[in-house]
Length: 241
Length: 241
Image 1 (cartoon, rainbow over the protein chains, first blue to last red):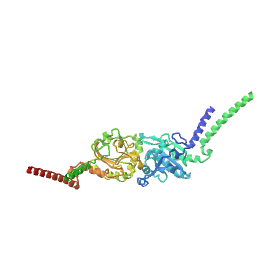
Image 2: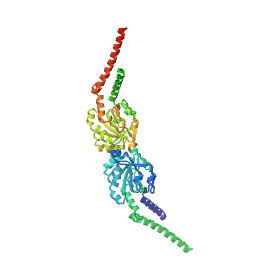
Image 3: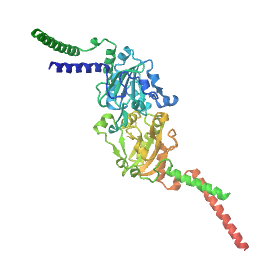
Image 4: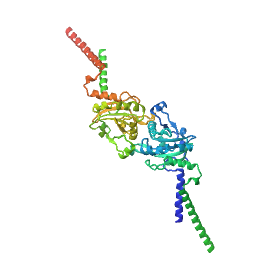
């Protein structure tokens, strides 16, 4: 019983550690992947008005330009002008922008499978252009390369993306959170990734909560009890032999 | 010489008549086509907020529901939140809405290859929701069926539609105008189709302009001259025989 409890608690500790890193198994990229080399031919389209698009000669931005030598927090979502994206996902980054900047983040980026003019119209409506950089992935090629595409035709959206977030340092993915379903908003919000960034910068024991401390203590207690019983058993056998 | 001038002027008259009907050769449908049977399995998605989309269970609208037993003016454009579409195309219908209603038009409809939530956001920004019904063609199936699709990836838009307009009575296309290029705004505006609708309801001779009257008169004069010369020749031959 003590052994099974130990295994259970060890599992808890393992999931805790994964939780720190924000590991998820939905994307082709993972923590440790290089985002720039994962999608070498892909570029994104900075949100802009149509007139700005014309005057920019419809220029696009390479992933190297976005990520190289920078600390970037990026989040992707199913679509401009949709529910959770407008009401929760973007605000969770916009409202934390000072905290991201205080952590030395160079850019907080929102990306979706929309054209850059729609992204611009949406950013203006959300009054979020000052805080967040919006990019379109108009042909979905960025999300396809990252294996983060999903068909949302049932919601009248067509081929779009999962809901996700990542913390990327010099192109290297340090944290990656992907929701199990695009309608969910559990792991990809601004608060969660901000917490992950905080944890990455501190020693392990200072990061875990009181509840987590208690779990670690109980796991250690289990180990102590199992070892003590084993030791006691061995001593008993030794003395009786 | 008189005969070639006659042919040239007859050609002018023919192009004039075609001009009245707004005939263009870019689409699979044409004046006289039945729009409902041209795209029998296709439906459009009425513009709505995401919450309205959820409460409607992502319902779509059949072409029969839109066109059957109704007089409809419909116009299609390359994309929500793009230049000509926002600055000229939609306003040319919005600003003429009272004239359309006075002509007995039941619905003035704007459609684009966008999702219904983007279309809703754009309609709200243009303050055009009261006057115009906006529909999305999120997967482009409506425009594909009508052979009005076009790849606008060069403008960071992807597969979209030509810029076009039509006057449709009980599903039957009475007027169809398609711009030669989506960037043009020559034949698909509200003023042009309003004029076409006016002309359809009046006798032919009252519709044509002074210049057109002059051309008809000159063509008739040509016919008269040719006939006179022929008659004179015949009489001369008859009298000399």
